[in-house]
Amino acid sequence: MHLGTDNGPPPVVQRDNGGMSERARHWQYDELPGVDLLRARYVRKTFVRHTHENFVIAAIVYGVEVFHHGGGDQYAGAGALALVNPDTPHTGRAGVPEGWRYGAVYPSVDVVAEIAAETTALRGTPGFVAPVVSDPYAVGLVHQVLRAADEGNALAADTLLRVAVTRLLRLNGGPMPRREVRTAGARIAARARGVLEERLARPPSLERLAAELGTGPFALLRAFRDAYGMPPHAWLTDARVRRARLLLDLGTAPSEVAVAVGFTDQPHLNRHFSRMVGVPPGAYQRERKNVQDPG
Image (cartoon, rainbow, N blue to C red; front, side, top):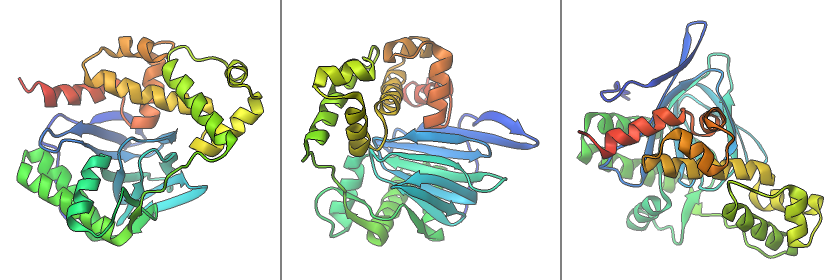
């Protein structure tokens, strides 16, 4: 397995912990549409509960990552991959004092579905069954994708991504779990989510939201957590960060983004964004500008 080095913009150095620096680069390669890329080393970094619209395929090469997923802690060490389906709440932190180093690809649902239809027997919307798979070969493939993207080798990056996703789907693929709205509580949770999406910047209190929906605050809290894996306020922060990413991709200044999505100011955006995406919003946007405006 060859990890290579960055040929693009330097990674963000977030802090130094007695000589153990934390570095992360979150970027896109225009020849891999629908895929985000990440290379990082974290020591004290803690990811709060959040979700992704895309799949997470994180290949660990050093240390251990612990992430809460599906009701329990999952451990991914060197040679293993952490695999998270879209819209699945999870966290992230170091499992050993020296932290963890990894590379990740985040392919969209459409990208994975296209690969699955061409190379596997899976039908419907595919997903990953187990959240951790030990497969050093697949770990190497992910890092080769990142290296090819760094070097501007479109043929290699596209090929290796397809090989990696196919391998993981064949080893650990199955139908995507679906949340079906069957109970009255689930229907109320879905309505509450709709209200929060519409009023992202100025949401109601839990009590007012419950009153609007004709239920009690604690009943709504339980129903929402059961349906989406987190309470309404945590889901709201997650949704704000997702919206912030879209606005940053469009070139909106971080200070304007903070107000638009409902954060008090840019420092609040910075804090929540870094705890979910892994890099500050300014660094995130600079990488997007490098892709969209090479000149």
